[in-house]
Amino acid sequence: MNNGRILTLYDLGRMNFAVRTGLGRQLFKQRWNLIVAGTSIQYRKRVRAFDKVTMKTQIVGIDARWIYIEQSMWVKGKPCSSALLRTGITKKGKLIETAHVLAALGQADWLKPPEPWVQEWIDANEDHRWPPMGEIV
Image (tube, rainbow, N blue to C red; front, side, top):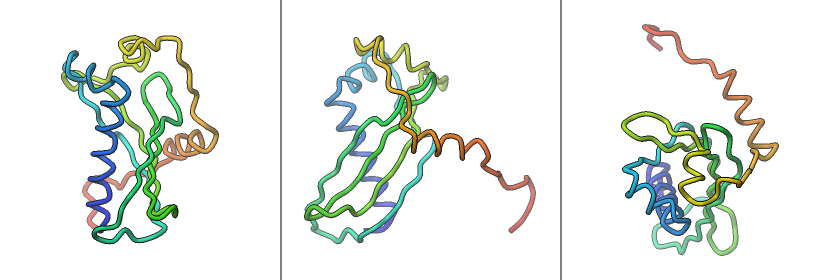
């Protein structure tokens, strides 16, 4: 599978995760949207058509604005790819603070600071250089 299909499968995995955690119900009830604001992905082994894939999804950090999710795909017990995502919840295009989201899930006291490797990714993104406007490459 190409990278576009892998990312689509990760999208489906996050929707499944949202439903299993109760977030899906709140997304529908509150008219919220689950967005991705950043992704870093690494590929280790090719996933071929008809491979039986196991996907793992877990929260690896929460700050005031973002929920950081790690997803990975496995075939026959071997890792194929891993993605780190900065996700958020919006309503009418406005980002909702994670404290409000956690309260709606009945988890207002749940704290999960980003794991050290996730914090390094967050810090590195602060230094991201965007291409200058109008520059043709």
